[in-house]
Amino acid sequence: MQPLDAHMLWMEYACVPDQPRDVLAFEGPLLLVGDGSTAAAKTEALFPGLEWLTADEVSSSDLDIARDHPDRLRFVPHPHKVTIPAMGVKTPVATVGLLWNVYDQWGKGHPMPQPLFAVPDRLKGTAAHRLGLLAPNVPAGLGENRLLAEKPFRVTPDSFLRLSALVYVDPQAKDALSVVDAWLKHFTPDPPLPAPQGDDLQQLAWSMKGYTQSLWVSEEEGWLPFLGGPAIWRKPGFRLDYVYDLRKALILLPDHPDAPEWRALVENTQGRVSAVGVPQAEDMQFEHGDAENSLTFLRSRALELMQAQRPDGSWGFDADRRDQGVFKGMDYHLLGPPDGVEVGTCARNAYEVLRYARLSGCEEAYRAGAKALERMRQFTVPRAAQVWEVPFHTPDILAAADAIDAYLEGYWYSGDPRWLAEARCWARAGLPFVYVWNAPGKPWMRYGSIPVFGATWYSWSWFGHIVQWNGLRYAYALLKLSEADRDAPPLWRQLALGITRSAMYQQSPSGKNLALWPDSYHT
Image (cartoon, rainbow, N blue to C red; front, side, top):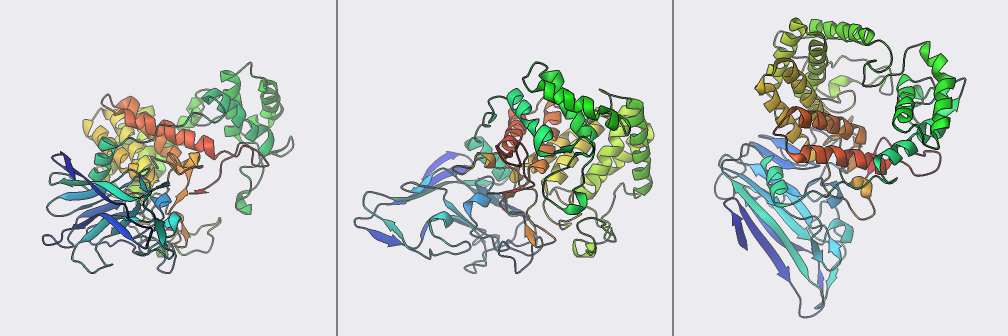
């Protein structure tokens, strides 16, 4: 045991047997937060990748996943489901947490200490919150959500059992997220891996094989939007964003050996594409075409959103939605309360209104957007950005990304420092969804992003499942924030780079899916 600073204490539990022993359980650092003081009272609790609880919520609940789903219980989860090895509870008197190194060996040749998170402690019935580390872990024979191994773990005199962690206590901490701040202060996220094809330009060139081979159908039909997936969306066409990407590759790599193939594909499809528009992506036709057309569309969209905006500045959850796609016939009242408001129901709309305000100088649009930004300040947990399939309540990285974007647009228009401060807060709120480490043989796991702490329609779990397009939206928002904020920490750019590199490692290296990356990757 060793104090490190005013808020941190290092603890280690270890044993070396004098003869071979079969071990069913070895408890390391264990906290009973609130025992003998505040009991089970709390304002917030966090277990990155798995739980983000507010005052009256309990861990392993069915708020975001069906009660009978095998992933609903998560008090002893597989270590691969933990994005940042930290957990914490904010009580009425302090935020208390446990932080550890995921690469620490709890036994000879066995990394990944096993976390335990029960808030409140319904395992032993203590009037407190139980946070701890165990051995052996799930990969070594402990069943998920079990306290005793199903198969004994053999420990010999030439091996060991060892568990260590940092105990964090801060009476001044403003929230449970401070345990993530503390982890980042005392540990270091793994550095982003290099691009798997050599460097970023080589990766870009190789990625064009997705357009020239994997998704290409014919000169008559164009490209598939993706391989596999719902048949209702699997229709070929001449996509403006694909042509834009190919042209961008030609600009960046005009002398690449594959450039003639890219150029021929662009030229062969340019006539068909021009019939419906010009090559475009995030540039809003500033690079190819007429930006005035884009601004006209943005104005129309902003006016539509402003007309639908409520007097308090919000937009609510549409529980009467009638999906005509893959969720046709589903009852959205199951996902959340009619007209319910969360940051995720407002942020993307606010972003679109404020983006138009910034590009056009429209003061009316700014006032509408600023009203939304004020309403969004009432929230601290990112939720409700993916309510086309995910419960309204579910913590969601996309809500954090959209909120960063919205507040940045407000800041760019007005220079109001409040909006920049809020963008920083939502950047921080996205951290628990991103892996800062990777398991052996899974490089794509490093900076992979969990989309939500829950399940689609309560049934299709996302715990331990990476959905990188969500993370890429967050990464892009972080890049914009790092450019806008002169005090931005280097972490934002590191995360953005790492998330992008993770997507590269998720691209298929061969076969029919060459250069494509999946909707999700299971860790």
